[in-house]
Image 1: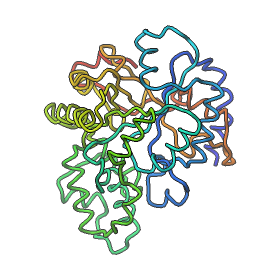
Image 2 (image 1 turned 135 degrees about the vertical axis):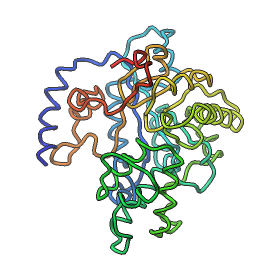
Image 3 (image 1 turned 120 degrees about the vertical axis):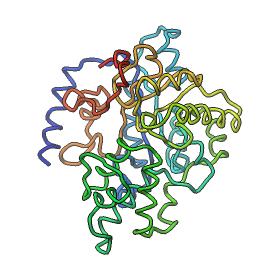
Image 4 (image 1 turned 180 degrees about the vertical axis):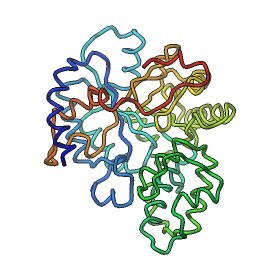
Length: 356
């Protein structure tokens, strides 16, 4: 409560200090649900926004910005559009099916263009994103008193995996620490070990299913831009150059084959990138790439476009009410002045390619 109160008070001050927004604004979301509280019981809360809150965000943004597609945004970024009116683009990562059920009708009703970045190996399947499965398994393990002793640290030791700063009693922090430190093969080993201890029904995973190719085709025909988010949502900085190239090239080719469209836009899974991953995206032929922080690669600035991610509580004040000033600070990235960036974008001696 105290932290929320301080944030509410700071929002007015920071909003004035940061001035007007000159650069295009790119907003990101993940899942869109009907009932936030109910969905948060089994999901990472910060990946959720209710349909009602999404509409509040869109209405607030619509009074201050002109909504544009990613191609229109790209024209502003590369200088082919020299106009200077404030513009905003709306994006959704991972390609969850609830985007089609809850967000797509709302966007159509309001005439707002949008984009979705899909994990192609999960499209039209009942597979689940590994971050969702890992979080749910960790949460169930914490709640299960019959789980094997030693906690998560003990399980990781048994698998020969070492993660500094792991917090076994906090499923979200543990999930984040693992994803930010380990390659996908290690994450899958942890999931398999947890599945041997914790039983979760397939029905529990249904809300995490991805869009189908038919849904994506209908969305594309309605003007939604379809972009790539790799084949399997790897954190690109943890994988070999060969694996990264396969992920970024293969996902693009699959979308183009299935939907008959040219794919120009790419979003880095978890927003994590370094010089090598940016170069891989460039080599794969993408024109624009999107991250989650304000760092830019000076060699490929249009492949490291910052986004601001929002969720249900992003714009709430200390009373739990919607706050325009707080949302304004989020859009302006004013709170970044306080929190800074947690990511390490360097690779070897190539860190000079990254600003910030």
